[in-house]
Image 1: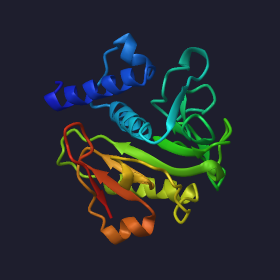
Image 2: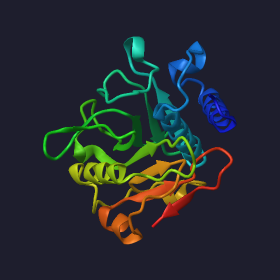
Image 3: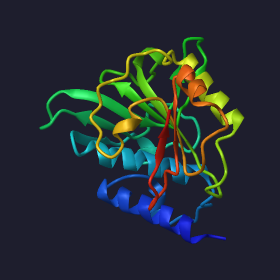
Length: 222
């Protein structure tokens, strides 16, 4: 059953998608979706980030190619052929970063990782490696706000950070407004924080962002 909170989330995603003109194919196709699907929350987090970036930068939507040119990846997918956003100095001067959603990155071990959102360097290729990555975000949707980030979710994201060599990497100088405390490797949820201590989060090179949902005031730790 679709709850009022889920309807609010979907509405916010649609509003953001329309304001960005072209987003994911389901917005225009009206294909029924399972609102408990983490993908909806991933899109909400992505679009909220992009809208925030527009306050300080010029943001350009870059379609992919083929039948999936406007489809953000629901599952890990190759970067080539998928849409992305390019972030420029105003007014459309130097390209600073690429923002990709759900696309694969070759880690320092030669394996593939696909964080929900990756901030990539300006010259990052269609086959990026860990050397092309600045920071990553992962979104975790919870059916109720009282559910916590699980130990498995924390551990998996921590492993991503390590495998992509981001643990001690200097953070990029990204100018955000409402999301200014999120210039880091962030585990984002509409639910509650994990049972890990703040010192564990800091040592792991990540921040937990909780209560991230339309109408809520989110929290960041540590």
